[in-house]
Length: 208
Ligand code: MD6
Ligand code: FE
View (tube, rainbow, N blue to C red):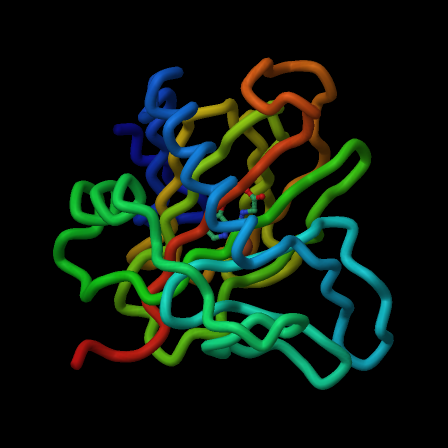
């Protein structure tokens, strides 16, 4: 576990190689099952309706969605209207391992990056509580992750996230700006069709 200080904030942890290849394959299979039930769809930006370059789905009692109206958490898939599938056991175990002080995770956002997809600098701030960290898992092609401070214009640091790596944004760094600049094509053999999957586990509501 590496704690990475960023702009005087503590609470950003980087756990390279947390999941070995066997665990990554098992996790992929679990995500494949979830996505068969709750297909990836292309969200759009609030107001402008501009499509994200990343495709999304969720598992857990709540899922993060974005449409013309705004960002929010909701219990059902925006296209099928069905409830999101359960959070896979391996991801629950990860949360217990790195976020055991927090209440159970309620949402797992599934982001799928095809060639050329990226994610602009943002804060994860749609949750009703920021007490719990956000825990992220990378699968497939390596990505360049950028993280800064609590203000959009704070200086940033970049590092590469490889398949199996875990990042935790907690403590003072819970609301740090971050994003994905690019995904490096052909850097992993995990996903048959290439690309990258990122999973982010969150607590959305205050503990019961
Ligand atoms: C990604 N990750 O890795 C995007 N958010 O594709 C995130 O937006 C993220 O890695 C909160 C905490 C950790 C993250
Ligand atoms: Fe994020």
